[in-house]
Image (cartoon, rainbow, N blue to C red):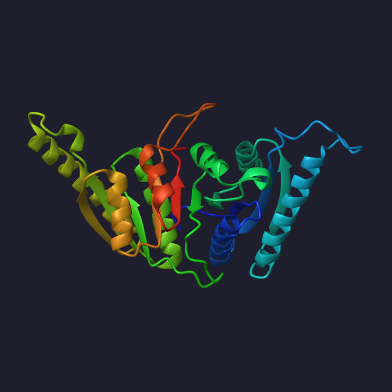
Length: 296
């Protein structure tokens, strides 16, 4: 296996979207016999000031109880399928930071979470928090959309995995994770490079720019082909045209892709925001899970 996955974190708020993501994470843990962590993070920044005798506000108490139910529900589902270790936790604070802190503290290898959760008073962790976690996570994160197929745990098959590439360092890291997932499920890798010359329209030398980008794309695709062949994974590559996100989403629909794996780009350190606009657009619009791999 190219990238070892020994521990998987499932953030949850008990919503339908969270459960769809949790089922994917439990299925993956079942497939590779990984340890599973289930976390619910309660945002207490806007709780009302009427403290109870135990020091909690009434709203905080209700949110903590909701979070504990969400964790227990997911853990019970996991125990029905996993023989490995299952750890549960409820944390209070800023949710995406609680998730990142948990990743660091517990040496998590992969996060799996839904992209849609509770809203308003009932929201505990997902929704906008999923996007913030995606932008700041230091480990790969599989984002599962609410309209993804509901899987039978233990029977999920990823037969076709799409690996978009732009030849960058971030794309290279994503290749390793995509191939890891392909090895687990005996899947075929599809790799895609999009030649986008839309911003060069009417510029002198546009044809030469197109040819240069296409040559870069062929080299990037060959990198994926070589790495896949070395790993014994079937691979097919394509050059597309137009904006990258649109090309990725169209290819995914046209070729019945089961999962997309792609790199993220951005700054590092305290203010890091790792996800580029292409990745965010794909995550928001894909109907299949997207494995987003940060550059760390």
